[in-house]
Amino acid sequence: MGRLCVLSFCMLLLCGCGQADPAVTAAREQFVSQASLQGEVKIPDIRKAASAEDVDKAKLWVIRAKINAGEFPPFADGLASFIVTDAFGTDDAQHKGGADHNPHDCPFCKRDINSVMARVEFCGADGKPLPLDARQLFDLQEMQLVQVEGTARKDDDDWLVISARRIHVVR
Image (cartoon, helix red, strand yellow):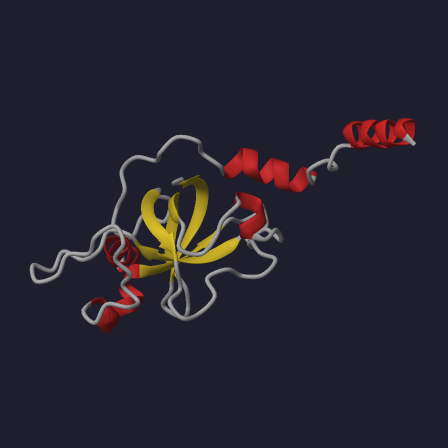
């Protein structure tokens, strides 16, 4: 009986928990930054720049944001895409958001909540979000603080979309 237990344990060690999906490993190597990203810009400022007629579509921006879509789920099931809310707070002299500030619960920020939100997409060569769930891909959860670097554009629904090149998960 003891030999059977030892043999079973050895087989588990040899087999391991399975190999990681090669697509997940490749995406992590491509997108994940272990170091903090520099040059953060507020989402409302990027939104204004993306709306300009002479916008530089190749310009790289860095945002600091929380994975937060208010009362809606922030993650797109099965896709490398999620909704974020700016983590800077507001510059309004009457109201300064702190580290724990949630614009979705704040009466001042809720007035123009779309101005502090963006959709982040990690796309493949076809320009579409990778068919890998961002939660598993980057070990993410709702309300987590992230830094994302990428290009910015506004879509047909007036969403600010960040086509991500790198992500740093603040832990």
